[in-house]
Amino acid sequence: MGYDTALRGYTAKRLEEIERADILVGIPCYNNQGTIEHVIQMVTRGLHKHYQDLRSVIIVADGGSTDDTREVSKEFQIKPWQEKIISIYRGPA
Image (cartoon, rainbow, N blue to C red; front, side, top):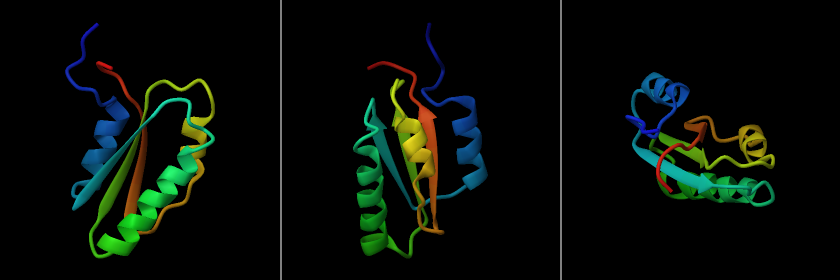
């Protein structure tokens, strides 16, 4: 089955709601519940340290994890000027 886009409907809608971002960081993951929080934390720290004045979006693109990767990602708190989207990736490997 082919898709017109790798983005799910809710992800595309959320990006439209955000409208504009200066920086977009994509984090691909699969069954990384033990490490995803640290990865998101390092990304948010780096954005805060080097690009605090820019509006940023972090997209966690989950490859269909069977553990709690998405749940851990959703619970992680980010800075007020940052946006976070958790999405299930669909498309070619």
